[in-house]
Length: 95
Image (cartoon, rainbow, N blue to C red):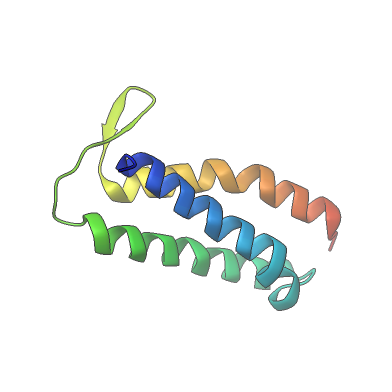
């Protein structure tokens, strides 16, 4: 069985790739407002899925030598992965 940290990272990556390669070009296009709203919806979706699995369990997620709960681990890893993908998307679709 895969560690919880890896499962969350893989889920985040799957959501990001699906959104930036398929959903966002159709929904947001070049609109920064629509992109921001769609991106917020995507992170909320990731948080709901991870929260459904780990909320209330007290499982410690390790990141950079520190221990975090599921919420902060999901949010931070999602943001760290989204930044380079968002930069790529914005360069490819200038507003």
